Image (cartoon, rainbow, N blue to C red; front, side, top):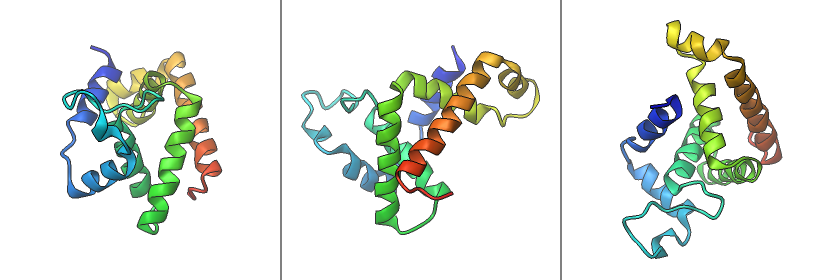
Length: 138
């Protein structure tokens, strides 16, 4: 099992709160009209709705501001990011970037593997680019 698979599974196991339901409703659009209610909602860009909501929530946590304004700015950032990279590449890059802060041998493996560091640098550059384009201030 890869690190990306473990991280993806863990992200989907996040406890859903009232804020998640509000953000999900705001971002899902017509996802409720999908043919199969059991299938996870996915946008045309391949980013599942749950992962879109988690990205927006994390962005809002990292960049406090007026709620409605930040929902729109963070959703814009994700839309821009989705135009740049496919979902699986996003998961791999974000997993490596988040796991770089893990201490000890496990974190050292990620910090010392050049191919993973290329993805981390690309992810951070993309984050800066999309946040600048959508006026998400640091």
